[in-house]
Length: 185
Image (tube, rainbow, N blue to C red; front, side, top):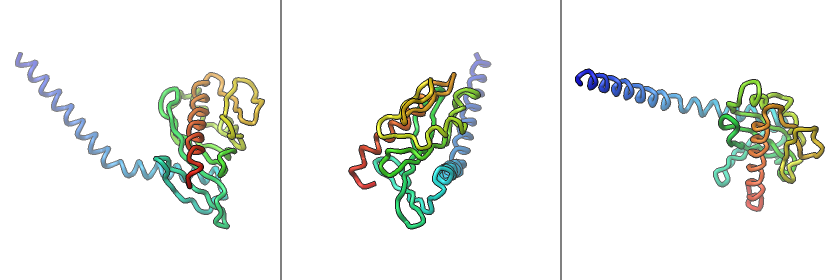
């Protein structure tokens, strides 16, 4: 009985020490993690809209949207984050679209933990380039065949769930933003 009590006491102490250490490390790294994520967002916007001279960050109903201004100071596009569940975890996407949300300029995958070799192909240029100039007037669709509509992309073979997730995440965010279009962004 004494040994059992000692083991429980030691294990409890070790667990409490580990939990305290992880909490402290998390607090210490929190600002650095946020700064690195913001840097990835800015790099994605620069990649997708190199003509953006000025980027204004705005928040509307808990959605962060970036207004992209050209060299004349005129608004020419919006960039926004879209995130949702993929096959193995959360997928975070940066999307650049025109001001009417009818044509996508491109996407960048900010964060993803999809299956290496399959779902991770959503991060490859062959997949992402399909979204350049994609019509988003209605819903974006995915197909297993060659796209036949201006609003379709070809799903990754063997990773249909990841492809479907990216399309659903983008459709959902665009629908939310179109719903707010009557309100000034």
